[in-house]
Image 1 (tube, rainbow, N blue to C red):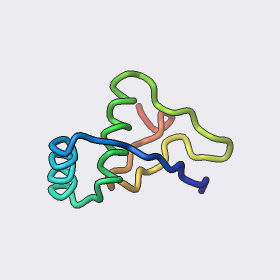
Image 2: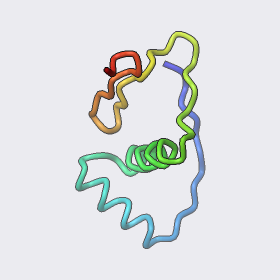
Image 3: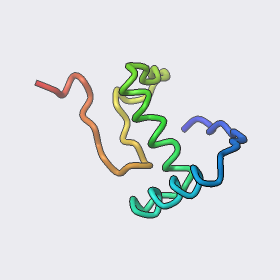
Length: 75
């Protein structure tokens, strides 16, 4: 698995509190919740990250616990 990027993120305290509550509701860390929200936004915008060489078509996202079928698995 490739090394994960580190990022310093400044958030309004109210935004952080809202994300922290959302993360707790979904049993995720705040970091995992932010990544989940970013991935949702990327999918919605049609900007899903490209696969790296050797990566499965649609890897299971460890932050949301949901396995999504690869495009070739869909009818």
